[in-house]
Length: 331
Image 1: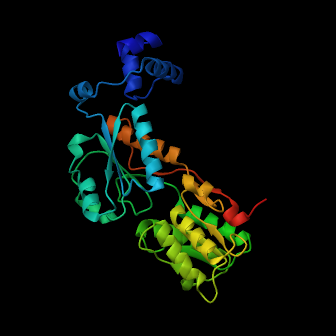
Image 2: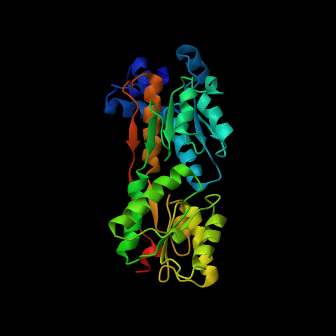
């Protein structure tokens, strides 16, 4: 720390404030100290920090899957951003299983970490009422959130409404959705956007075009799309609640000789890397994962450091539609 302070031309206390992400440091000073940290390859001594501050230097990111491209990218960004603040990120992969999520919620391993960012699938808001652990926790995702917890997400109702409106603007009227029943939180908010857009256009929801799946996978998307294409009146557009299912839907169209987007437009959500390389490239909703990561860490570190004392915060991060050939065609 002394070497960092000397290189940056500041006091050891100021260097320490930057390393520990304390507020009230001038941006120019913070940049100078960060530059010295980068040049010297400085890393905090986590054991010493725990002795001095009563902290471990570890954060947990609890997610349902690590093999999902969306959560894999989120985990990568979270790990890198945590390291910038001097923390090591630990992954807790719950598989969306209720008992594992309850363990995360109840703080079974909380003595090992300073804070938790948690993306639940199975636990309900009411389950948090029994939580006694005081380890700071920030929630991600689209489930109903219990009072008293910071929550970071995109406005998925608005994003889904915008996607369906895009399909309507293309002249599509039989707009199907794939993924309605898999996970109540994600499905309910994205389905709400679908219903809202149709209602505004004066179009009733056709239950034959609302398809549930057992999981948000390519195989599930392909099977669901095969069922839709077998209908007496197939859809002329399909909005899948994630990109993996949309890529499966594109596979079903190719197998049946259905042209995309001429015969049916296909759209997804999440903008995973694979979406840009699908055949044809996939129109999708792009959440700002950098903003999601940094906002969740800002809230979590504020609770850990005691610099954020206001009540629970509901934060929405940006999103945008990425229009590609699966809906708008070539040229």
